[in-house]
Each structure stands twice: as structure tokens, then as C-alpha cells.
Length: 230
Image (tube, rainbow, N blue to C red; front, side, top):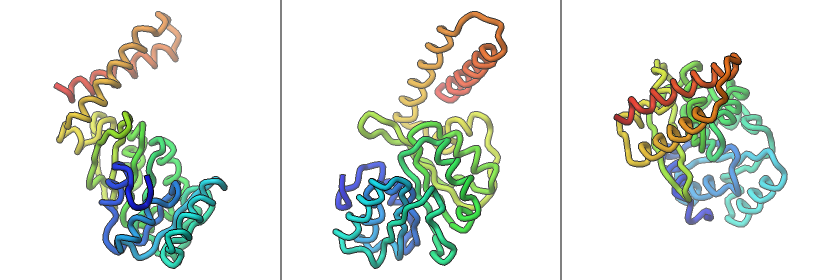
């Protein structure tokens, strides 16, 4: 992968960045996405944010090599700390992390997140955490995708300001993904349900409250998935 040829999952993220956006790409991984969009003249300005020194330096080198330092600023900082009010960021992208970590990043930087018009979030696991956060913080899903790349399944959630009231099943599986019910969706949730059943079978037969709670949670999630896949 490079800034000429993005991975399929990053390309999908890029497709949802509006024309002439001012983008903050958090956890930017060599700044490939902002470089790709800048060369396509799709963005006006971008921040490539990194929290670790090595990836930060790699992103700096990439932007310099591409000759894009007038459009892309590489900044080192934790999550949305890299964004300043004067940047007028309109779109924030965070890709390739777990859902709970992405939710933690946007919660911690909520004031800055709320200055943006669109969030493009691509968790590799536990998208439920993002849907819960969005529902509680005045964001609504305008688009969802699910895709498989290198034997990993990713979900893509595009959020804009608004309200939504999701059912438990929609929070877990994604309201738009449930409606579409693609082959990848079916594959992911069949696999998850099979794994939960395996864990359930191996749980010790005990009245300990934490085990009873775990058993109840697994049975509840299996039921939600099986209903959706019927």
C-alpha cells in the first residue's frame, strides 16, 4: 500500500470524505489517506495525526516526499488534541482501530469532534461501542459498510449531526447493514455466533454472579444475531 494505491478499506474511507473537505486523519499511518486525497485534489487541507514518534516521523517523510507540505500538516498528539479551532476541520477520519478505542478518542475530544460536520470511523472490531457513543452524543448514521480485506472484516460508519434511536439489535449489528444483509455481514455474524456458542459451552457450571452474567450476555447476543440472520 502507498499513497498512489490505497488498501480497499482506506479507499472506502476516502470515498466518504466530501470534496474540498478540511480533514483530520487520526492515526494516519504514513499519511497515505491525506496524501492520496490531496493528489486527487479532493481536500483543501489535512492534518495527519500520530501519537507515537516512529509513525509520526514516517508520516512527515511521506508528506515531504510527495511535496504536499502546503496542504498536509503532520502533528504529534493524542487523538483529537492535534486539532486546533483555527484549522476549521470539517471531517474527521479514524480507521483501523478497535471500536472502544475509537469511541474513547472521540469522547475525550468531544468538543473538537463537535466542530466537524462528518465523522468517518472504521473499527476492525466492536463497532457497537461507536454506535452507542453516537446515539448518546447527537450523531446519526448516514452510511454503513462492511468489507473483508486480508481475511479481516471491517465496518465503516459515517456519522453526521442528528439523533437516532437504535434497538439493541441495531446497535450490535448496524441498522443499515442489517437491512442490506450482505454475504460479508452474514459471514461475520455467523462466525461471531459460533465463537460465542463455543465460549458458552466451555463456561463452568457455576452460580457465581459474574459467570451467570456472562452466560446471560452471550445467550442474548446469540439470540439477536440468529434473529437477524433468519
